[in-house]
Image (cartoon, rainbow, N blue to C red):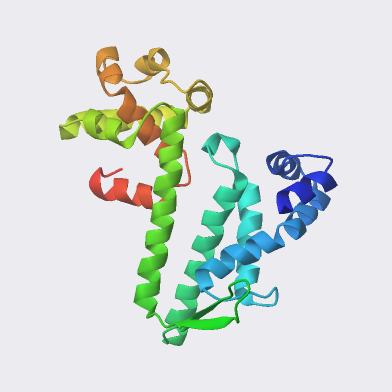
Length: 248
């Protein structure tokens, strides 16, 4: 409903189209967009804080800043909608804020939320979680969201997680070579765009950029595509995993 109303106000301009105009310098449209999506921001912040969020709350201000940041950083090449991207970013920024506040104050947090059911008397449900439990739950939720987004992105390339398991290089040197190819691909804007648009690896061009045979690149094609997608996207948890396991 919110998106529909916003599209009506903007002469059926999509949110992503509005973002492009904003990135080109349309400040009035930025204010209009942020104002239209305040309910979305509040709902996203509330899902982290586990309580109703008012516009006067500090957490809401953090959400506004994060939504604005998402607009500035958004690129359709990342393979996800602005709302999906901004939702993840808002949650991360709010969690970081909560952690910082807790560290400064040396106190645990009481997270409270209420559940109202239609045709029933509202019953307040109180959840008391330790900060560590809250961190773990929040991290798990964000990690799960990243996996879902990445899975959908892989599907658009006709790939799956099972494909990656089957096609992952068995030897460390082979993995390092595949990662090198993926890095070269991501660093070249033209090749990266070609990958995202045509959904296939530009093997001929890559062969000229690295000292690795065409046969080797083709053999590790699926793995290289997956690593390139992670490196070119805003997947914080997956990049952390890659740093630890593959030493990227």
